[in-house]
Length: 244
Image 1 (tube, rainbow, N blue to C red):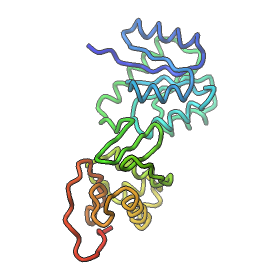
Image 2 (cartoon, rainbow, N blue to C red):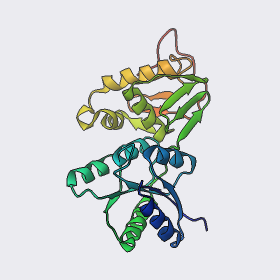
Image 3 (spheres, one colour):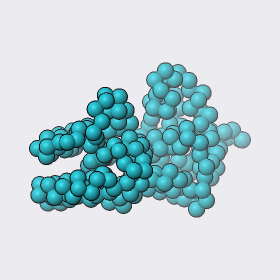
């Protein structure tokens, strides 16, 4: 049976050694990072089953590490924190953390929380990995870079967020309401013109022929679908652009 891999992110070497020893004794495979940047690289190279993430790191705040991780991974994250203020804990959970344990903690409590979080995640579908490729389109979620035919494509934060959402739900039709709510918030679910504009921009930047999109497909009256195995679309009549 393959051991579950846990990525421990803590700059305190003593805590790192303690967690590695204690978790290894409980049949977990443990990888240790001491900085946020190192953690993101390790998570991309050796995807863990769970992350134990200290909030006070020397380079990136733990909340920022989780936020970046969430752009391409749904791996469970448990914060390790000495902070007692509720605001920090809420912020950490809001960006995608699953739970937190306050230092100093006992191993029985930590192991119980690890098991509980892993149980909750078992039924959830996996998301895109750290690298997505389809045809000549390549998206590096760790480096936040997009290339088309080997050439870098510059996207605005909103365009990148929309592309990430499409890839995370690839080959599934996303309704206008779903897309608007995820990108602009629940109050914008009626503002479909926002969506049409940004989908047109993505097509212009990422489709070989924006008038005949192969990836960003319109589902008339419903929403859009990002197709990972694009087929050659039928030629539009005359010079008409695709329906928004």
